[in-house]
Amino acid sequence: MDIGTIVGLIGGAGVLLLSLSMAQGGGIQAFIDYPSIMVVVGGSFAAVLLSSPVPDFFNLLRVVKVLFKNKLEEHRNLIAQIVSLAETARRDGLLALEARLEEIHDPFLILGIQMAVDGARPEVIQDVLNNEMATVAARHQKGKLLFELFGKYAPAFGMLGTLIGLIIMLGNMKDPDAIGPGMAVALITTFYGSIIANVFALPMADKLSSLSKHELLGMEIILRGVMSIQSGDNPRVIEQKLSTFLPPRQRGNLRKAA
Image (cartoon, rainbow, N blue to C red; front, side):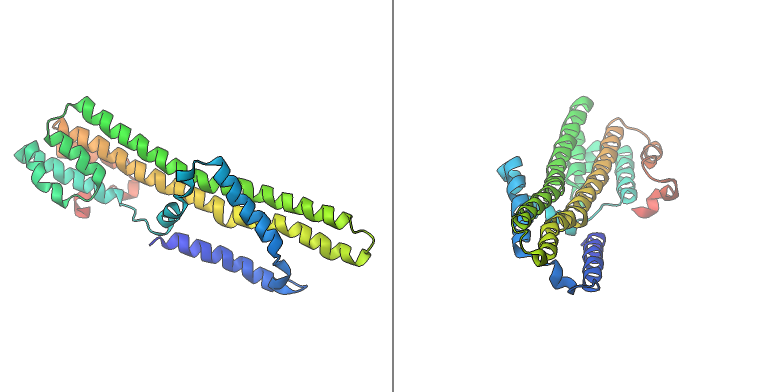
């Protein structure tokens, strides 16, 4: 469970609701207008569906699940595991790594080690792993794009709803008492669009981008590690190579992380 996502959403929504409840002129009830909600929410979903391939759109719930349930692999632990595999390969040969595949949980690392054990040429291993990384990056980009589209279209439909409200208000200028409430209703759709974009959609898109970078960095570490193991590099050299991917404060004795 991603605590940061949960705390961020609850915190953002909570601060917003608290400020609205303290507002003069009716509290939260004054900010609720169902036709405006329909325009912004319904219009945004329709626009995103129109601009995205249907399978990508219906993966939205799966992408949301990733935001709340993601287990970030510690790169320090990953490097320690690769160094341990390198020690086994150097001591007992590459074929000995096949017996250790069961203790590996990362499918990408399993793929690389299995190809090395099977005797694949270095250029073949590198091509396959690079293609896998490109596929993962493209999949992540599709998920991120959905939330970026919501962040793009929700304010636009908010403005559209405001224009609709202004047109209705200006058509009823004979009643001066109705101008103030009419203006408030007209502006509230812009408010809804801004909430969807800045409290939910865009922060979620940025979170997905951060998760993607973390996962792709782990895959890059695995790629470099597998190629080094396949070429027979000294485990200590492999550790030094891979530790450059870590912040300086995490470059202690990596074997303790194993």
